[in-house]
Image 1 (cartoon, rainbow, N blue to C red):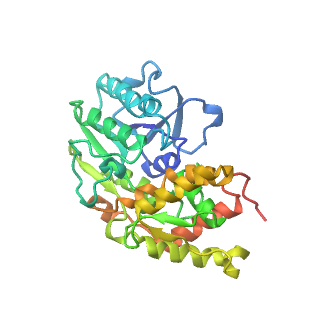
Image 2: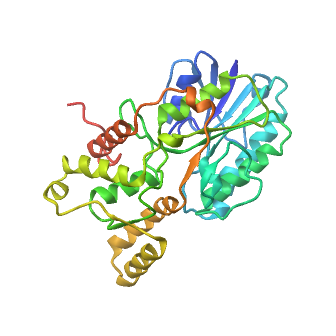
Image 3: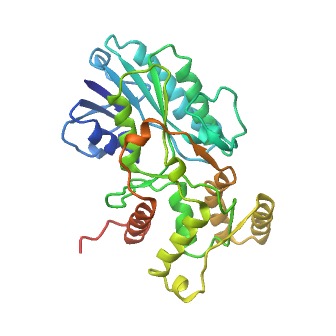
Length: 340
């Protein structure tokens, strides 16, 4: 099959392409000079709004993984990529005479502040959203589901990095929060100790997408790439990170830095307010970065999973350790990994 893949240069794109082999993968990129080269992948220069002429005659499956994941960008800015970009690609899909399927990669965050058990089903009514990113991805899902095309949706949980080598192609909100936690500059975290933190690896996320491509087509199907009931609870994750950091950071090993307290929303809001009033620029930056990720922990949910159960996945402590190894070795992706 000939598959058009968007989002190739993102966190999961290269691994998606790798797992879609031996299909013919056409990876849409803005500039081929800066895109990774992978055997079996043909780089196609263009954008969601401007695809090369004639491409529609080749494409049988579209895997749309391109998105802006800047949680706190203005909604209108996020809509340009996540909603308008998706709408443009849907218009292209209608011009593809050989199209069999349109697989849209979304996020489990479309449930907003809803908690408890979350089914693999459309979120027909807009919940309250924690950040503009969630709303833009929910709006994109509505466009996909109402398109009349043979669409399927794969919602990803929090992609931490590679379980193979810990690599993180692009640092996101989770990694910024881990940086400040490692430095001992996050004294408290909003949430509850038993809230699940749904971490998955790059390989698992791509594996669920590939499994969806390989499974018989089912128009309207929604699949969760989620750890489900295997996701760690917040107190377990913090203990794991604390033990790991103690082996790599003198402040943690000496006891000068310890795991942050888990507090309710009101307490965390008071802390943020005091930081803003203090005028401390460093702590204001910490709070700004933390606001991109930490409030999600106030709305724990367990994702229903079906197809994802058949995809191999390593254990979460191994994933956390490998990603932390990578982040520390590369100074949070600011320098190349040493070969020594």
